[in-house]
Image (cartoon, rainbow, N blue to C red; front, side, top):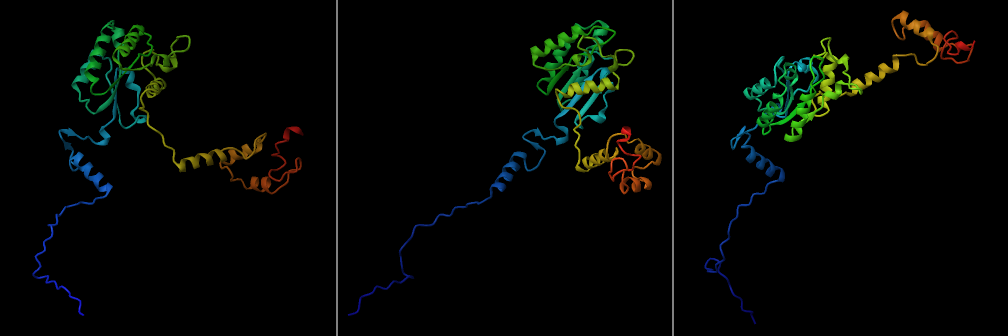
Amino acid sequence: METPTRSYDLSNDRTTFPATQLFDVEITSPALQTSQNTSELTGSGNAHTNGFVHKPRLEQNRTLLIGDSILKGISKRGLQSNVDVRTLPGKKSRDIYTRLLTDDISKYTKIVIYVGGNDAASGTSRSVYETLRSTFEALRHQCTVYLCTLCPRTDTDIGPVNEEIQKLCMETGAVLIDCYHSFIYADKTTIRPFYFKDGINLCPKGSSRLVSTINTVTPIVKFKHTSARELTHRVAAARYSRPPWTGATYGIRDRFQNNGRQFGNRNFQLRGRWSTCRRCGLANHSTEDCRNHRLW
């Protein structure tokens, strides 16, 4: 008996299937997604995005040192590349306040102000507090303000001005840099080697002391990186800058100085390395160069 079978005609089949929905799926790597997000934030590399100007890295985080003639001795050579120094000799606090308002200081994130010495010398020290307060209020939304206490002077008493500066820092939140105690001894006397003969302006040693004092609060001094080659040179120089042993080696030093070269004397090489000392029995020096010379 044949088993009945059913034939299917695919051409006339009216069986319908639900329509397939197509979805566009993008498979991207996390790195690509990060780059896309970054490009969206930065506006595809443009400098202007939503009205904000992206400054170059060299123009950001700059520091400004501004003050009277005390800052004149500071050399830009030893400071970091992002530190600028502006000196206004003979100017008072009001002049520096006007200079900060007229100049373009938008690129500075830190401003160090040293002012008040000329005000104290001219008898107008009472205006220092109000002027510095106005200066802080004008700058506090743009950058961090640092106020330096004054170094001792022989022509006037700067104590009242320093008290006003300390009081202002406590009230407003400005950062205080104590320069006064870096230029006095423990008995409150002035360290005169830091000054010229006038007792007002700082000598190079005093300017270096002022820079180091400011650097303890905010870094302005250039970082010194020592390479491996320089370290090797230092070790080699320290190794061969003196005789290989210590003691009464007067003869060796004389030969080094007279010859002009460290190991250029052939007689020293022959007598010092291949002969035997008749006093101590060692073979690394001659009898006349024996370090036990004083015992005989």
